[in-house]
Image (cartoon, one colour):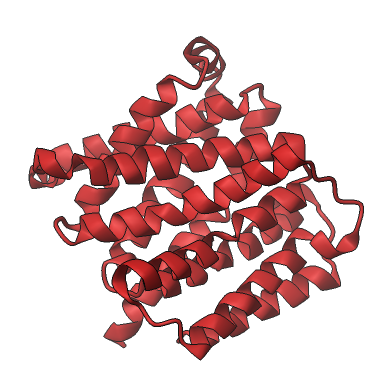
Length: 286
């Protein structure tokens, strides 16, 4: 059973990422702009991780300066730019289009992994990739029609998928030198500090003085940011990059279920088909 532990870690990370709408949607209704939500998520993640490792294992903070570019890659190039592109694309085009463009990420990961590390693009991996993407398209409702898309929205959407996938690439380099928890901490050191320059800190501080907004922010930071990145990076340290990225595609299924259970969104045949497709892709990669 030990060989399945990294698979379960990746799946659990995807499950927790899928719950992000439970917090971000309510924060948005409460008055936080997308850039402020990015600030709360990344800077809050940094504070929680710093406190956690100060109390448990300070060796996590030890790195060599020559490896800082890896963490600039995971933190700024991936986490920060991915979230900024994704939230911006949601404002320009439909949520469905933004979501399906985000899930071009596994395709980028599989291609880069084959180029950089000669990872094999096997028939099983390719089949799982295609089936997972089709599953995501069903879940997001892209086949239902009435979807809006502009050139700028397309560019932002593809950018979100590209930068999202780059976390797996940069993290794999960093994991060859450091344990998963070190990689996660320094990722959020860069992403948290970088987010300050893209948001209105005054707006964020004022809004978070409300106890409900503060509670939602803690949920966003701990449940849908810190924990999934810890689990994903841990699983990635023991699993093929392409497989890890495809397995994380369970995220939109969970997001759809959150929408149904928490916000009363309708459950339709496309969502069930999407769930089935993604479960099949996970089974293929078992």
